[in-house]
Image 1 (cartoon, one colour):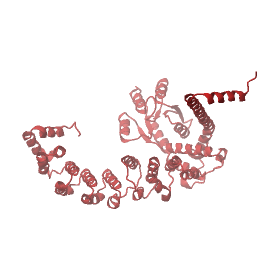
Image 2: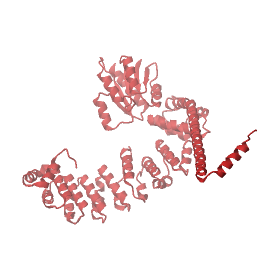
Image 3: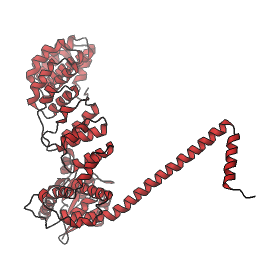
Image 4: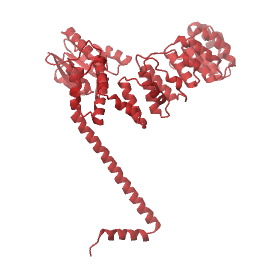
Length: 125
Length: 383
């Protein structure tokens, strides 16, 4: 089972992702803002196989979470996918500079997200 | 002795009758103020109660709607993959459990479908649009579009835009020229986004000037909308009788680097309106059309001040280095401060070809001219 942390303040997106990445193959843990995401990461000792995050969120934005995840000492850093509708060129560049592994612009194609998630999980195994 | 209501009213009436004028005015004022306060409270209570009822309905309905959209549309394994999503005949029976015979029920489902479409695209997005059409939810929006209230029309336009629903030109074009700013902006935005072939057709029918704010809004919409068919703006630059449309189209030509429209802009150099002429010169400069430099220099002496400044700036932007002597003369001999400054900046922008001239000017000029030149050479100063 792959453990995924989804950070998203929109109420619909977690429902969609939870449905397209169903158990038992995936376990999707949901945080509704940056602060909660950091708390969940720390409480679980960064033991996630993948992080999917939005950028614009209350308390801590996606880039702050990304920096936190990438700076955490782990044998293999958690792969990160950014799913956001705030995808201007500067933000995409900023994300890749900080080490994001993939970038998807909202509205997403659900099947595409599944493929990208599978690919990243395979790569990190 | 027992006091009845009529006695009390009688007392009030007699007090009011014998009271001085100031007291009478005060009593009326108090009665009006108290009534207005009570009325305001009642209105607030009513609106709060309606909100509360709406929240309760939402709390009851949204989980059902989410489940239906998820099971029947987004993650439905029975939807055939070999049929285009817009042609799939959806099973609408499960949606019968929603109160779609009531307006609020339909509005709630529409809002939710739009919310989902903001998050998913591709087949799922198209299926959601198909559901919206098969449930006839578009008819409500069409009704709103015919409403007398502008805010309802704006709501309908936004809904059609988000659902990617085409609207007939006869319906939307009059709205694109509405006197109401919000409605006008929403209609233009909808037209640009929904009209697949001619998103700028409303330029033909714009009668009033495009206000600066309209232009900013339109520019934002046009430049941020993807998959938009970009026409040759020369059509409006040449034929539009609306100066603001011509001016705006020149900005779009520059944005899209539309070289095919350059001859139309060059023709504007003969226009009697000096504002348009100055804008045409600016556009040619921004497009870096070197072939027009000689003509600009030739025109220079016959132009008003701000066209002259535009010419000097254009020469600075084109940077061909062919008119350094002309710029040097203007810098040294012009009596107008702005012209000297524009000439100096143009010389500095032509730095590669004008290195010797800049060195010479630095060595020979004094006073204000030297200050201007040094100011223009400072890369930290933009203006």
